[in-house]
Image (cartoon, rainbow, N blue to C red; front, side, top):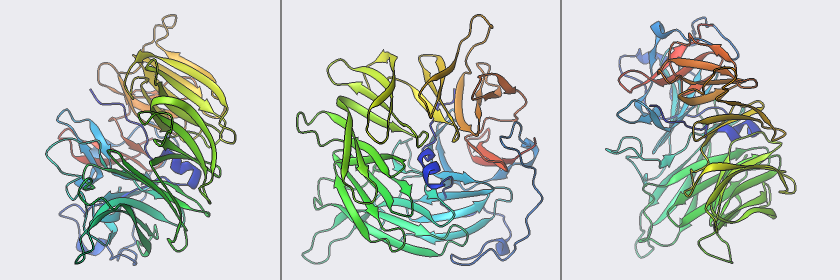
Amino acid sequence: MRRLVSMAAGVGMLAGAAACGGGSAPTGLPGDQAGPAGQPPASSVQPEAVTADPPLAFDTGKGVSLPRTALQANVAGSVTSKFMTLRDRTGYLVAPDSLSAVDVLTGSEKWNTKIEGPAADPNAHDGPFVEQSGPRPPLVTGKLAVAAVPLRMPEQGTTPGYVALAVLAVNPETGAKAWQTNAKVTDDQYGISGGRSVTHVVAVTDKAVVASFAQSDHKLTVALDPASGKQLWERKDYDAGSLNGDVVVGVDSNVAENSSMVQATALDVATGQQKWVAAAKSSAVEILPADPAMVVLKANEYSTGHAFLKFLDPVTGAEKFSAEGTRNLGPDSYGDCLYDEQSVLACTDSGVLTAYDAKAGTKLWSLPDQAANRVPPGGLTVAWHGALYGYTNGKQPIVLDAKTGKDLSTSVGFVPDWVSKYAAAGVDKDGAPKAYPVKK
């Protein structure tokens, strides 16, 4: 059964983001289709493409292989980690040592830009075990494609080595490097290696680029000038999760009352000044991708372990709506949620699929619906522009209307993990990354 996964890059909507990349081009492609970083591809010919927004079916007879570094899958063929973001017909991939772009309709690499410095986790994409760690998909706007990875900086004589959060910004069309900034995570050269860490870019705006590092008890968030990469501010023990207007909201583990507690803390994106605190006295907090008009998070109460889905006002942190999960104990006890990048947040909790208005926090619909003799899908994999993509209990691909829950299509072709108006991408029957063009 495919695991329900959320769109990690969903907050990129607030910065126009929707793409990520990494890795080299698949073998067997014409060499003149790829250009070096900073230059366009040698061949600019692009095949005519069918588009739909949202698409309801994909042409599985015209599949294109993608770099293996696009994702990590388990033996059941389920995507467990994503390293790519799909923006129109371009996939942007982050690898431990590079950021690259590939045309998903042809499979040709458009550019590949190296990250300077020794990777702290060089096998993050291809280790023998499935890990939830690794770099998250980069954020992409019309101006910048930005990725974050961990580096292990070597010692220099009597100066000890250290772990750094490397943030790379490039031109999204050519791959030309705008800047790279390495932020020191800690001076502790023995207690942290950078391996099995999670690095991600949370915001790319005209005011700041915000990126985070998290490994065990070490967490760091930095804000950088989008033009130069110069550091604006940093906050330790803080893992940023979403951008809502001019406010960054993240998980704060620096709680004076109890070191085992965490909370949601909002900061000004340009200055790092603290704005408000919510979900105080929690044992676990997860910030979810959602509409900029509402901060959405999952939180477990420290005293009871009860799990809640909370919708908060991004200006004040005031709670607008809350739903308690049916399961208790553990950071994932509420369930999984997907944002359709428009107006709907769909969450699955103990076999019940519920859709919420992402701007208002109100419930739209839920499945199962016994009166209509309808059951929820066996799983959801991605949401995009008013559509929920997944599979039935019989493992057949399906698309639901995000606003109503009604079936939109049962002739999808395959179960995607990325969707755009040009194509969808996921894994083939062998668990390898593949993209398929839109059919209708």
